[in-house]
Image 1: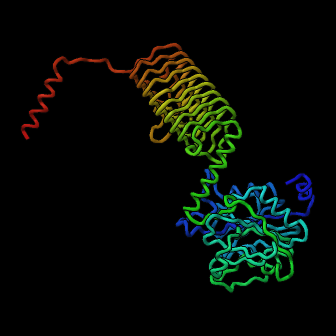
Image 2 (image 1 turned 90 degrees about the vertical axis):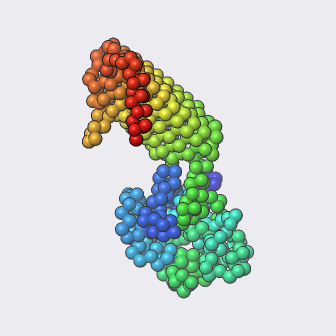
Image 3 (image 1 turned 135 degrees about the vertical axis):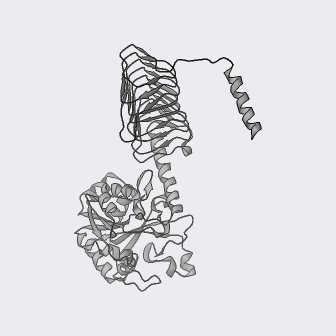
Length: 453
């Protein structure tokens, strides 16, 4: 879209987006509202609200009864309730009092991947020439059960739902995405005129098209990519939409300066942040709330959520970083290391087989293989503090709450239950005792027991 078109839209009357989000998700076999099912870690409705907010002046969400989670997600935007689910046309009518003046577009919460650019194109088409009604359409590879868009001479004549379509109409490749845009007064009048005389006994929003045509108004379609307009009504369609979102996120990450060694194997969240010159190896999964700073490299089969990493850190392979983790500049987290609610200072290392929970590890400290912090007593979590430059011997057990000062060394295999002062060597293990020949005696006793029965 050129600058003149953008200026024309911004100078035009008020625009309102009505988002239909009352669906129960019956085909998903779920008690969760359909629009609350996640894509890349956030509810699908969140995508549509955020994108619509870039284009429209106001947003109104139509929710079903007992959908407090949908209303909470929609806040601070207005929410109206569709108490009786009598079709998409009926749902849109529930928001009629909120249409206001100017243009109204009706969107679907289970059609969440429409980009702001496509929404702007829809609004521009409605405001261009003598268009009375604009709609979004697509040409999917498999039209399946989508409603068909019947056109003549470049103008839309009507929408026919699959259940009501003739064999010839089902052969049409142009499919309805359900999204309509019209002047508020026109929209309200057309909604009042539609009926439920169809195979499903429902009020179809698409019937507004026929009302506009009957008034002699011109109806035009904006054709957009299938990946933007695909509806989500089943778990299989949810998986297809997830693949689309992941593809977008991966391309955005690489465009921003991140190397994805095997992009299709890396799974991102909608809020994952990569700074430039980061490298992500195959089979890494990012949960919500991850910020990877410049120069950090994350190796294969790592799982990360709620963490800030780097810059210039090395993570994995096979590392797990859980919420509350902060990995400092140049720090290293190696294979089979798990961190939770832990700060790992600059240059600190935990290279293998370690659990650090509710811990603060000072700069340049070295955590030996097999070290664990015992942070949970069955009721409360307790913190472990490890000072800068400390060397924690392999298989050390640090029983929190406990503080180890700067430059501390713990002997391998120690159980540390008390604070350790700076530069001390802590040994917390029993003295070794060797019973000469006892192993042979022990094995003979076992053999005798087996022979006796």
